Structures are given as C-alpha cells and as structure tokens.
Length: 388
Image 1 (spheres, rainbow, N blue to C red):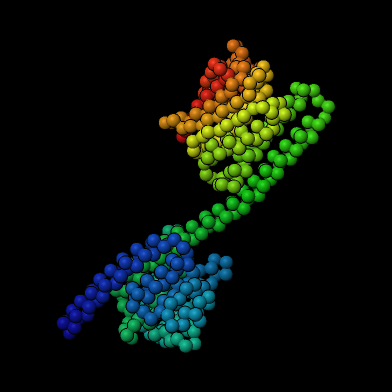
Image 2 (image 1 turned 135 degrees about the horizontal axis):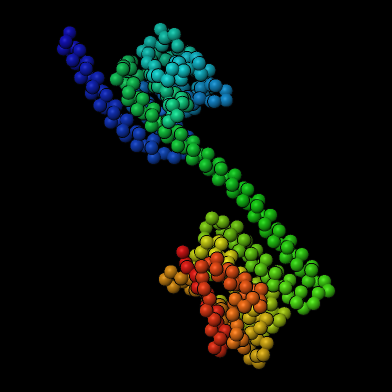
C-alpha cells in the first residue's frame, strides 16, 4: 500500500515537472505575441499542450451582456462552438467566475455545475477550469482544458500549473487589448489631423486670395508693398504645411528642400521688381523640427524680400543671389549672399525701421540663433542656430 502511494507520488511529481517545462516554453511564446487574436490562439494551444487535453477553450466576459463568450476553442468541434455563450452565473465557467476559484471534475455527469454540451458530437468527460484575473482582481474570463488524453484524469497537481499559465494569458490579453485601444485612438487622431490640415490649407489659400483681392484696390505704394510682403509670408507657411502633410506631421522636416521651395516661390513672386536676377540654392541635408523649419523659412522669406527691394536698385550688372545651407558640428548655418549695393553703414536689426528685419530678429530669438552681416562686395547674411 505504501509502495503504491510512493509510486503515484513519484509519477505525479514527474508529470508536474514536465508540465512546468512545457509551461515555461509556452509562456515565452505568449509574452512575445502582440496581436490580440494571436494571443488567444497561442493561449488555447498552450492550454491544450500543457494539460495534455483533447480540447481547450477560452471564454471572455462581456461586461455589457454579462455572458461568457467562447472566443477561440481548440479540439474536434471547435468550429461548432466558437462564438457561443453561456450566462456568467451558470455552468462550471460561471461558477469559476463567481467564486474566482479553479474547478476540477473527472465526471461531468455527476457535477451539479456542468452546463451541458455546446456541441452535439462531443462528450465532456472531465474538465479543469481556472479564472483569468487581472491586476485589479477582476475576472475577465476563464480558460479550461477538456478531456485529458488516453482517458486519464486531471488531478490537483494540474491546478497550480494551469493557474500559472492563466496568469500570463491574462497579462497578455490585457496588454494586447491596450495596444488595440491605442491603435484605434491613433487612427481616430489621424482622421482628425487630416481634416484639420485640409482646413488649415484651405484657410491659408483663402487668406492669400483675399490679400490678392485687396492688392487690386486703390492703395499707395506702401500699402501694396505691405500686402505683398504679407502674402509672401502666408505662402511660406503654406509651403511648409503642405510638405508636413505629404511627408509626416510627426517627423522632422528636411530643411534644404523646404527652403529651396521658399526661395523659388519668392523669386517668382518678386520678379516684377527685377527680371534680371539669378538665384541659386545649394544645401546639405539638414533635418529640423517643424517649428524651427517654419522660423527658418520665414527668416529666408524676409531676407530675400529685402534683397529684391533694396540690393539692386543702383546696379548695372546682373543680379545674383546665392543661398547655402550646411550643418557644421552642432550648428546649422544659412547663408544668403547678393552682389548688390550693400547695406547702409548704420544698418542694425534692432533699429526697428523695417518690419521684416524686426521679424527676423524675433525669429532668431526663438531659434536661439544669431546672424552676422558682411557688407563687402554686396551683402552676406549668415544665420546660425543649434542643430538639435
């Protein structure tokens, strides 16, 4: 009698060790799965393998209806029972949910809690069912193994192994549900952002059109110039916004491409002043955040307008404007050079005589940058600001 008990204990211990090794292997697979449906499939297959059962099922609790739904079953009749439900207060699964405790029976016909078969062509001999309990100590469902293979019975040693698996399954389900929730919110955010961007683009275009209409009014030269400058700034903003929408609002802006677009737009819009001006652009690839890209674009906008209006008024030779962008160490440098008449000796950004130069000074302050002016053989503006 004692020898029989010893043999049974050794057999049980050995079985538990084998299950524990299987448990460790399957948990690793579940923990690396990030898609909700895949987590459920991995969990059910793990339950079937670890418990050496013919079938397994995972039921999740629907908080609205109060029912337990069979999400993804395994076994010979899985297609027949998927999607079926039982009340959360009935059956073995309902008892497990209500009591937050595991349940084991090796004779379902003698169990007062057995709900009955969900499929006609399947007979449940024995079952072990454990709750899925989250970190808030709430039951979100159950996982169960049905019919141990070779007509063997489940035993008390199976329960802690199955509970350990259920714990990791619960964590994986909660994690992937949260990932799905975040992905849904991101999609909703993308829709909202897309709609906002269309409206912003339309508003910028409408503003530019209104400025163009106002230019046709009977204004003096100063009024017309002010409207032209304002329209140029609006178009610089529009260019950047269009680039951000096409590429990705969350990414940095490739500054060289944006500034080249700005310079070409200014050249086209200011050609009514002087037709005989060549403008060239040479730039390294420099990535900056959208805010700094806009500031840099508006600075270039103001410098070019100033050059077109004042640099070539007393020149006989062909006008040239060169724009260079480079990244040197931790600094971004933007150089704007012309071969015009140069600036007055008393020129200063802080004098406040020009709205455009005041804008440049304010934007430089926001960039944490600086500007140097060289008036030998024309004028060269060198703008520097931190690359980070």
